[in-house]
Length: 365
Image 1: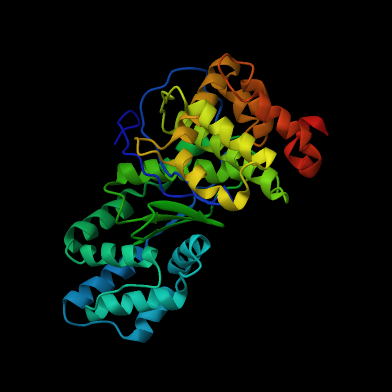
Image 2: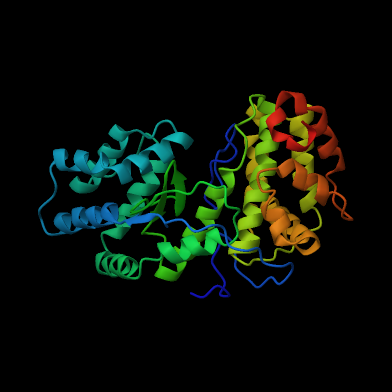
């Protein structure tokens, strides 16, 4: 798939909203955007290594099961204990504590034995269903895996992401290609995890990875999380808007068309959080609606973030915006000077809260 072809949007929850959802979008719809100049690529550094061992191991488990040679419980536990599947378990456990290594093993044992699986979490039930369906698609999945390894889309994805990043970023050192069955792509520390079951071809894998690598790198520029829950949620929401806006604008080449109520929906959420009208413990359903309203490319947060970065890029140039990705508050201050941007009160509320999270206000120190 070339960079101008539309990319089907995927909306898994991401980890940048640490206090509520800690999760978000992996990719967005790709269409042409021509505003602003391109920044120079950041300094060269080696791309992450592609580790497809987890995907090969899952397909071996499936083939042996279909061939009448089911794995022992010890072999299944060994699979669950490998680095790629420890990353899978840790990711899902961060979003649902009932996902544990033991629960994952129990799900695989049910799959091995042909038994229904019903708990303890709907997350594992869905993975079980996806794994069950994969048993009927082994030739297709094997071909997909072999093609991905032969073409190795990681260097191209890395270059695609790196071209729109400043030099002082940290990028993962490894890409795990595994069978996840729930989330198409996510990061765990120094690795990005990609789901073989979701990515349909090497071009899509490259697009997923480029977007995710850009998000991870941008997140590395941010200050430490704000200890104040209310202010922290507002800042994380703003940071996520900037991260997704930058990745979708520069990496996916998507230009959003925000709906009339989108800016106020995002600004209203942040105002309510900053004033305490919406407590953190009650914020999840409201935030979820900003992330995914059922439309392509995600909800208002993505469309507004894309519009923000696209507008600033057109007005200031990509190099200027790129150099400030670690200062989302500063970017918001600059953007609110544009017409019809209802974030003035949000900016004022953030300024009044700067003493609680001074590292997020570098221009005010």
